[in-house]
Image 1: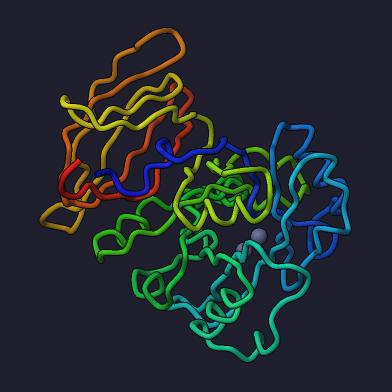
Image 2: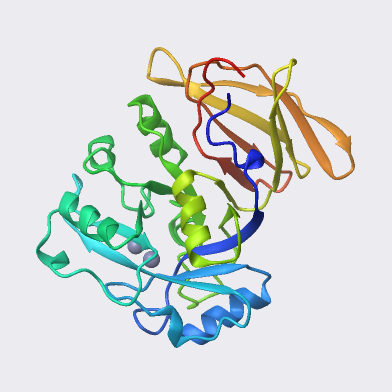
Length: 302
Ligand SMILES: [Zn+2]
Ligand SMILES: [Zn+2]
């Protein structure tokens, strides 16, 4: 069966901003203005992730949009001499005690103990090495950080994902804005979550289960295991690519399959079934915008 296939989970797809800053740290808009901006852009939920402090979700009016607490925490020392930036999603009102003295591993555990999911922020922008990626048990990482892409072209971290998969890790992938609103840096990367309902608890549960994908534009519509193979359906895209562990350097791009337009609104691709081998699927559209599924694996009987 196809493990963690969100298209088989019940619920609805919700669009979320998982990494945003407000005037409670170095953002230019107030928490309410940030929430209003994303609501007007059609988002279903936003996670307020100010540097070093939690902006409690009950201090803003979501007006129907779900607002979650979170924070971005700088901690430890990476191989290239920077700090790890961790994005904690799902904090209630404050950071756990003892966080500032904690080691990296302790920090992840402390944040998790409060019910948060802990993602590695902008691995490429931080120039994280493989050793950095394996230094703690993170829930996932930012495969795409729009702000880092705009500012330094260091926003797309697929290589870091592939390194982790080559070491038998299956990180959950999120795409984010890391918006500060000094310029228009919103709505460039988002995460789609298949949640049972529109509550913070259901959103966190879906993220934890891997019922999500990351996008900078394209929409994944379905992933289905058929006799022909693995069928991927999406909004119109130029290519559907399956990436999985290879020999040699550890990773090769296995193949880019010729896609066929099923109708004017859908691209369909049929990939061979990589039974028992972890893989991930990404698509790229005519404008060069990508979307990324979580790493997954097919096992045994259907
Ligand atoms: Zn950061
Ligand atoms: Zn940030």
